[in-house]
Image 1: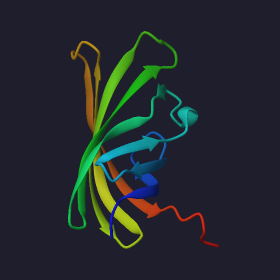
Image 2: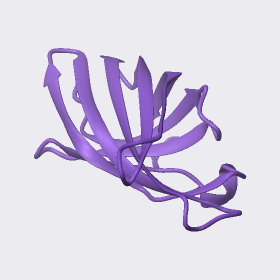
Image 3: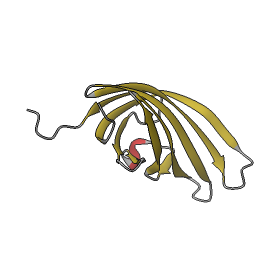
Image 4: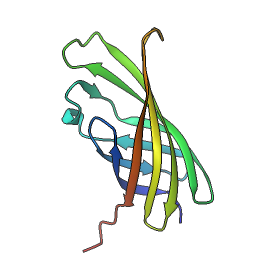
Length: 124
């Protein structure tokens, strides 16, 4: 089974656990979750790359965050992930690291456990 498609994802350990991930056939991917799910920062969508070796998928995505109380505090985040696909589900791990734009102040790595279910709009 391929990772290509849209997935409902729970990231246990993230500030807001519910995410949507889309994996494209060209090896790019998108990640999104509700902006206000994280009360401390406003987060951009994540955009990244992936590769598969059988049922194992590895990749990373980039996102930016801004502090809700001090918009001058901007961080660049890189989230690396590893997934194992089983039919219409996956399990895996992620690790996020955030740096200020001067690469001086770093937070992380912050771990999360991932579980995903393929989105099927035709399921009842």
